[in-house]
Amino acid sequence: MASIFAAPFLVALVLTKSGWQPGVKSHGEPVLPQRNFQQEHLQVALDDGSTWPWRASTPRLTLIALPGPDCASHCFAALTGMAKARVMLNKNESRLRLLYVGAPPADATALTAMKNYWRLGTDVDHKLDAYRPAAPDSVSALLVESNGTVLSRYPAGFDVSGLLQDMRKVIR
Image 1 (tube, helix red, strand yellow):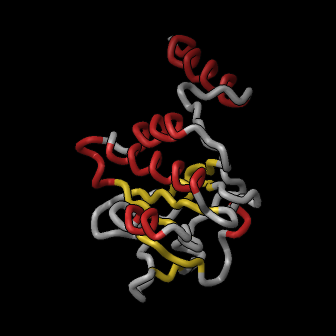
Image 2 (cartoon, one colour; image 1 turned 135 degrees about the horizontal axis):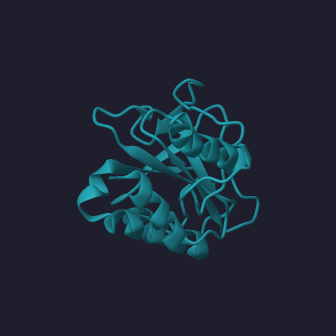
């Protein structure tokens, strides 16, 4: 009788120890060691003079866009794709905040369009520089849980449709 109850537990233990996890495929890369921006007191100064609240009044994830040097047409296209992915969350769109951390695009039209979807800010202590791409006109992203824990990193050149799939998994 005990073996009937113990067998599934032992199989699960063996599969977990071997590294197999059901349905845990992510399009982003894990951030190791795991970081929590709330606990680290990472400060992002917003363009209106306030600081970014990692914990919102209602639980909402944050998608951080980190541009490389000289954000121009390719960078802006990726930012537009990320904003469209947020809109494609439909009724859950309000559960994702968009934060752009870095020098905004030089093009005034692009900057005006960005402000419709993105909050613009600056990393006060440069703690996010390790995740920023070095290539010009590129952008990387971080998906951050509502408590400030970084879930995934999306390096420059990532697929926005994969990002959308990951966001749909965690935003319900």
